[in-house]
Image 1: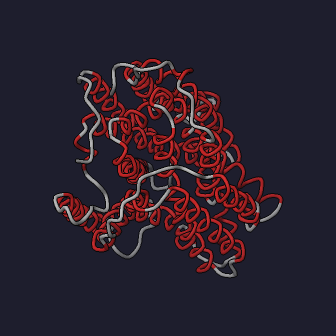
Image 2: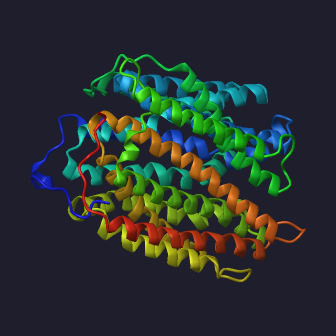
Length: 481
């Protein structure tokens, strides 16, 4: 972590380039709609089981397939953002998302709906790395924190609002309207991008290394699917291939993938699919570890709290959504303020207290039981959201700021890929612990307590890594050569 704030002219004297606010606003809005669509399906699954005549284990692929596609495509975005101008990447991303949304809205059977979700995910996977890279290219260093804080709106508010919005649409209109409402918004964003999105960026003519694409697909799909399958099998929903098979295959493929990228980096005639040089920066690597643990905590709360509220407290899904909604809104609203604080103070004064707050909140979650007032749960979740907002914006900004421009796209691809894997790992870990600790009747207070206890123990590692990171000296940005 950088222990000093940015140097140079004061933030108010470093103005954004002409048109930059419009471009960043367009990208943030597009990413928000895409991530909202990723989480909006969760509440609709029971209705889809009835309307499309599919089993619960089958309908889950609407979310699992989306996540797997994201895991496969995101590692490729580092190459895409170096090979093609941002405008072309954006237009391709929104065109894919819009096409997938149309397919979903018209889908007569489950297979077509699943295909539409895969097409949607292909477009969505590119957007967050594109947004991160564009911010780094357009925004002066002294104002990056404030602008990167807008990412919190995408990361936190969209997942929080998704289930609530889905419930409203389902009760009033039906599940197809989840796509018909989104489609015109996506088409307007596509048209706006064609007119206004103009970002200067150097491109490379390096050919695509197809073997790397295939190996990365096996690696990251195997990891995400294997981790997800562990949670499903622990809950009694697993069937077919044992979870360790795709997990081991993913780990082996990941080792092969990293070896190949390192070899390609030494070949002056070729280029790696995903450049590994960002890991030469200790700032980047340590921030990456903290972001990963932070996302494990975030996804732990996302998966455990609805189960606690619905299964232990016997409340409706709507009540569960309202209970966690304030935390998601708080995290999103805090993003820009935390970003401005980062621009003035640097990462250390924000990340260290946030790591302590995260640890305290996680231990607080271990005290909830069958009679805990829901306002207490909401308050704890708001505390968790505040801690993560205060950590994630400085960490993402500081990690990518440790790189030079030619590595921005690869650094953002690594960061976004890690978020997917960490989310799947957190979900698998907490669901497994909860299931093993619960009684034969399903989810109970003992299982929830055990899962939060594991999360609390993990949160201690956040404090330790934050302290270690704060002790290291400042270093110059890592370059590609």
